[in-house]
Image (cartoon, rainbow, N blue to C red; front, side, top):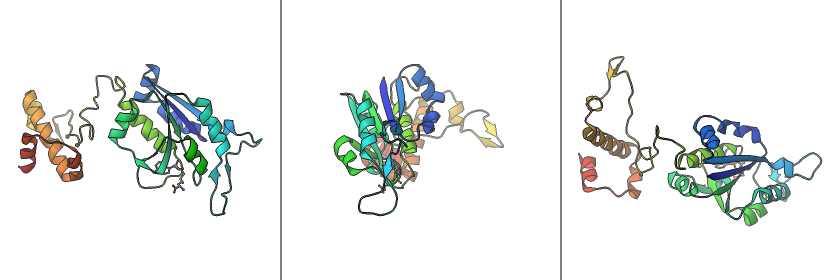
Length: 236
Ligand code: SAM
């Protein structure tokens, strides 16, 4: 069981996590998602969580008080505190696999111009970015993290889907998929997939994965150790 504690000023956004596979994973107690409204930790009568930046400039900054109190309220010995931030390490499948082995993740979502720097200094274990662009808040990035990490938790995907053959899991891209009908608007499913020959199907899929990776993401081969056979497929 992995526990996600999400700290945000827009808790309703996370209702989207209560659907499909993630909903089932919560019902089966494989994952637990708790969402905390940072405003509940404001001592101010208007529940303010932001203030003007020292030194001037545009925008507002999230105040340290409510965030310190919110983190302290959910903190445990096992917790790793993540801050969603465009300045963080770029999230990828390897990070998802690693974070899925943790027991407790506290995920802080920023808004406005970001958070008071003292929060970074004292509370954050790791900053995580979902890419080199800036969003209005950390809520969507946090949902990306929770979804990708939850898929890596054993049994979450059940038997119907497997993460092992998905893109990136073993370093390369997934192979093409087809379903019924075998002919659609005169477009045919490759014959080998209808052959029932599992060995040939596996070879065809491996070849397609390798070729597709070579075409679309050759950079991925930097981190993959290929067998002699796989190397010769790439040279075909
Ligand atoms: N001034 C900040 C900067 O340039 O680093 C950006 C603030 S952004 C408008 C507000 C919040 O959105 C951030 O504090 C962060 O939590 C979240 N955010 C924006 N882009 C993100 C990204 N690419 N990955 C993760 N979180 C992001």
